[in-house]
Length: 296
Image 1 (spheres, rainbow, N blue to C red):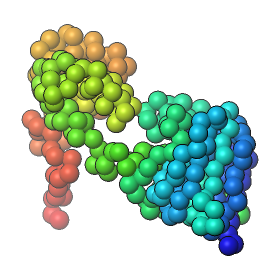
Image 2: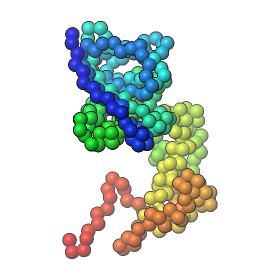
Image 3: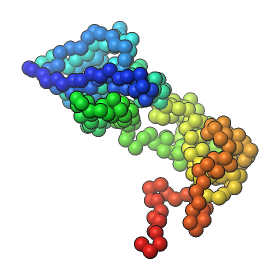
Image 4: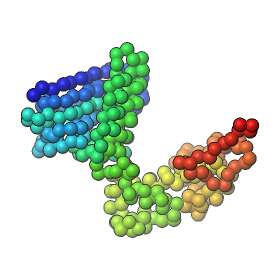
């Protein structure tokens, strides 16, 4: 059997490194590809296997079966060795990347070096992102480094969403927490509502959202508070109650510590002069209000 291979590699400048992530290479391959490794890299690679089957070995671990659709994580400093099953071949697309934002993406669950073989529910969407990166890699493109760097950010989020263990619409526990975020409940009480221990809830939220339940709920509450402060004239105390805080002073301290500015100051910065005055409620983001100009 034969195989087909196309790949490009790049050398981003220091200023591109400040974008957080840079693309170091991109490739599309299919057929009876030769075995890779054993080898060790100094950067990350995401390999999306969209058809076929094979095996993967990381470090001294035993080989793991790979069945498409699947994601292989090649992480710096860890030897890897992999390839398609003998005489069969597979279809893969890969992106090499690096940058200071890698650690944050790993903490948020978008990069999982501890589990280098990740089953995917969908390989088409990640492959489409890699194809766009490949198109941006055309020679002579003056925005090559910018476009490919933006593509790496998009790819990491897309791969996170494409995981087979988490549906495209997210984890049901996260949806329930978002629904109940403004109720005066402790993390333990939220867990009990779902028939879980506090530890089980922490594990589920950490795996699905990359943060603790407390931080997840706080993010939802403060985001809603920002919307109310910017789009209504509700007093700060009323805003605090709307998002689950009976003590407006505590809410103000919490808001200031997390956002970096006090609620009143945030309103001054984000406020707008609205014809007809402010509303008392925030519209559904999926159904924004229409503004009709006079005479048209």
